[in-house]
Image (cartoon, rainbow, N blue to C red):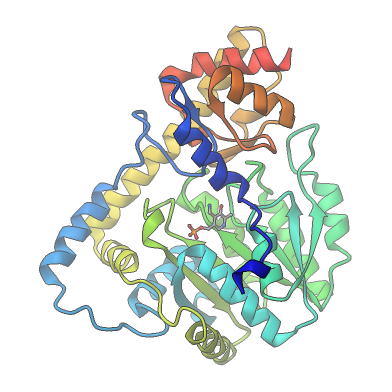
Length: 393
Ligand code: PMP
């Protein structure tokens, strides 16, 4: 049977990591894979996580199954974190999933069960795995104008006029904050305008919130989503604890379902659990148990929030420092990097320029021009600035 298979297409980002690992140059720089790193190039375990982990080891008495929805305490924590103080809060239910990836797939499967004729609209460009996940669930995919490759900002007019064409058989996927791969976020006004269009034309919003707290902070990053949830009958949300709790390998995330009524939301949750049963059945427990412990303990919550602010501020500092360093060398081509949000920026570098960065300077970035600013160390900024100038002149 295996002989009949054609070889898999390598994932552009994961295969870049393999090439990076094999590179023997001391000064190599990984700005490819989307993980946060500190100034020593490490992705540390957060203190709040370590403390919750120690407590868990002391108090956990069984490894028996938890259930199809995972930890309901965790699910409620995710709803509280994303939708606290909103009217949508009381008509939202959650299901723990293996990362946001699991949530994206389960929600896509649910949408397909509800309406097999659905088209999912993705930002152009979008997270590299959005299209494959939606298509694997049997949904059609279409891209709407989003990133203006000249200004490196969102092309609001083009986006809104395209979304005005979306209707009842459509789902519009939005990035909650810190757009991957571009770093260009929609404004609060845009959230309001898209909510109005959804209400007028009947499409359902699907928000992917993978970087809450990494842009402008927990409150500001979640403001658009909260507004939308408050002012819409139905929507779905995929969320991740990979970045803001540093739990990447623990596969911790949730699918949230906002219903017109709580009964509708519960019904959808039941169907989603049936789909999960036929797939991975139950999500891994460890990461969600840690997050639930942190978010139900005021002291640990404060420790976590403080650590999150440190990561967020570091990214902002790196962005500003890179732009300043380039300016001091007479280059003003990359000023937009200081305005972008979260870990990534789409630089506008061509595949050839990205290859030159790799071959001549041992700097690894994704072929589409995305760089992971959060992978940078302060002492590398000068070298990176020189390399950027070299490949663009
Ligand atoms: N959505 C977006 C926009 C992402 O960037 C990522 C991962 N980088 C995910 C979802 C998947 O996250 P997780 O690790 O929680 O599966």
